[in-house]
Amino acid sequence: MAQNENLAALSAAGVSVWLDDLSRDRIRSGNLAELIATRSVVGVTTNPTIFQGALSKGHAYDDQVKELAARGADVDAAVRTITTDDVRAACDVFTEVFDRTGGVDGRVSIEVDPRYAFDTDKTVAQAVELWKIVDRPNLFVKIPATEEGLPAITRVLSEGISVNVTLIFSVARYRSVMGAYLDGLRNARIAGHDIARIHSVASFFVSRVDTEIDKRLDAIGTPEALELRGKAGIANARLAYAAYQDVFDGGAHTSTFSVLASSGANRQRPLWASTGVKNPDYSDTMYITELVAPNTVNTMPEKTMQAFADHGEPRGDAVSGTAAQAQEVFDRLTAVGIDLDDVFAVLEREGVDKFEKSWDELLTATAAELKTTGSN
Image (cartoon, rainbow, N blue to C red):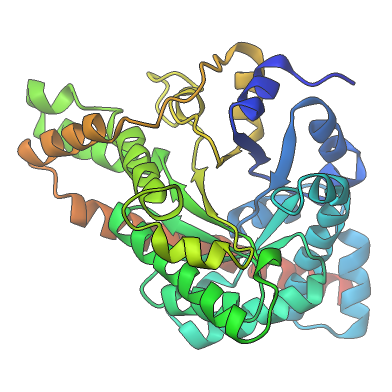
């Protein structure tokens, strides 16, 4: 099977194509392997919403739920077993990619319980637990970039565990995430871990920024405000990439990483998340085409991936050298009355709330299944 030309060109430009979805049906049917073979997919991300959707559809999990009910498993244990089994199986599907890329790709992410997003100690404990349960070197444990998540990121990395930092919305918070990563690498090296085996990505959310800011621009309603619709998300990501280059790619603050790189440390790559376009007035591939840059990851819903495969335009690096123009967009947003600090605070809280809601729905549905199955 041949790779799709558009997605192959995207990969050649330095973008790792990851699928933002996972289910047992996708693994068992061979669909995941097919996407690797034909869509240049080299990784998968999951989150509580994705797991909730997977378990609510079809019957792929029925037999396992029956087995867990017979064992008397409680709902938290059942959900943990079901989700980690899927992630472990996906890790095995990606083993060849993981080996071929030297551990850079072939990654599968699993998120800590979102109810722990504001609890450092519980986040660390569950991250370590998930790492041990899945027991695959190509796992990423996802930790949200809340204030409480930052020290958790450092502590988990210090244990030699690879981390996907999620729910990043502002460049200021992203800089704190990069600092937490470097601190974790230093601690891991002191503890005797081989830091060359530790990898990380920083998941910077894109479309949600436009959704929130566009809503506020519409409310302002002036021509100057309306002209800025659909520009904030890409500008924000481009400023994030400039911050990445500053710390990891020869910028003014690269010296700290350079010292660690001499011991084999890897860069923490930027990952563009939330890249499905939510406004039908915008191009359905804009968050791919406009964010092509070396050493990045773009995690896509399958619908967005197939859209790019069909009519995407892989025009090469669209990000390097754009920081000044991106900052101009932000200056204009501030000038028309957008409170960017408030935007990012709202998006973080809503992001955690959405995942908590999905997790609660997952627990409720699983509890009902356990009860029904156990009574039969």
